[in-house]
Amino acid sequence: MPPEKWTQIEAPVRQVLYAEVTPNNTLEVSLLARQKTKNPLTLVHISGNVQEADQDVAKSFVTALMQSAYDGKCVEPRRRLKVLVSPKSGPGKGVSIYHEKVEPILKAAHCDVDLTITTHQLHALEIAKDLRLDRYDAIATMSGDGLVYEVVNGFAKHAEPMRAFRLPITPIPVGSGNGLALNILGSKDGYDVTVATLNAIKGRPMNIDIFSVTQGDQRMFSFFSQAVGLMADLDLGTEHLRFLGSTRFVVGFLQAVAKNKKCPVKLHMKVVESDKVRMVEQLHEARSKTTPASDLNVGEPLPTDALPELKYSNADMKDWVTFDKPILYVYAGKGPLVSRDLMQFPVSLPNDGLIDVVVQEVSGRGQMLKAMDGAEKGAQYWMDTQHYFKAEAYHIEPISSKGLLSVDGESYPFQPFTVEVHKGLATLLSPCGHYQADFDLPHSKVPTAATA
Ligand SMILES: Nc1ncnc2c1ncn2[C@@H]1O[C@H](COP(=O)(O)OP(=O)(O)OP(=O)(O)O)[C@@H](O)[C@H]1O
Image (cartoon, rainbow, N blue to C red; front, side, top):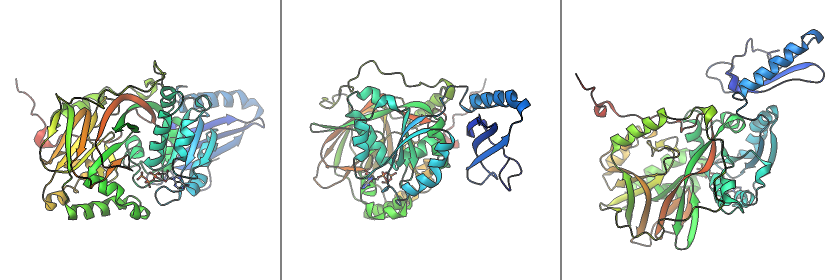
């Protein structure tokens, strides 16, 4: 029976978590539904007795419902999940949100959950490094982007790194920025732990490029972004504002623009594309070819089990482009949204083998403040002082010792570093097989139709 006050329940079949006829002849269905269009998704259990004569019909109904609910059997029900919950991400409510919202949904979907609440920094890295890969179908990180970074770097240190990278990572957002969850689930649902939990249960594997960042003889892996200049100050210089959640970045941006400090670096890039209009067209072309969810790559193992070799850490950079104007910041990465307020890489594609490199020239404070207007939809992409490149690799050389380098929100020494792309190396879970962020040409740049 529908729960009290719910006169009827309507939900897409994807939101059905489980259906069964129990040994004592009760039909039970668990699903996520909204009581009204604008209400949050809620866990709903429906149950009713099955008469002796109706048992076969009820069992057939349950089998058919489970098949449609799990994408015609393309997704295995009862996923085995390693769940990591960080008590220190964002406002620090991860553990209570897990028990109140996430755990009941995973239970209702009959998932096999192995939970760890992280007890210290790098705990997630240690777990990922030694993870028994055949024991799980995915690893869920209930945190911000920090635990995803640790899992990626843990997989890189795994005894079988390429197999480890085939295990999908699925974020459940309780951090400040939650960039990865925003890109997978979209701006509207990117902070919704219920939608993210549904993705952990039903999402399909989607390969993404990740990056090697080399600095001296150190090699680390980045799945999201690297920043120097204003954006690094914003990322690393606002830790004390963590309690503000995502507002922390707006406050930090205003403080950084007030300083308008030139970033003392030289930037060299192995550029593949720099035409902004063409990059938007390529985005649309790639989207139109996105494989339907039921045909996505299900994570075949890669041919070798060694990490990809570095191609550019000692490159001669002969055919590379050097940026020659004063720089306010360099921000490079993968995934359109870096926070809810900023679509920094609007033409980013998950698996094109390229990194999007944004270089903001030093410009007036007024123009930078104006850049906030529409930044959540990527409006700053069209600013003449914001240069946008797709590259296979880039190299940054500080020309002063004073500065910050942020790699996926973590602080690194402000020293020379090189970044290169590994195509499709890591795996996420996605509801649709592409990033959920729309971006288009403004009217002034849409080519007019050719006349006969
Ligand atoms: N028990 C713990 N004690 C101390 N630090 C922890 C503990 N558990 C996790 N951490 C660390 O807390 C940090 C949380 O970062 P995380 O990125 O998840 O949150 P955030 O910075 O608020 O979000 P975002 O990256 O999305 O802006 C990570 O560096 C993680 O290693």
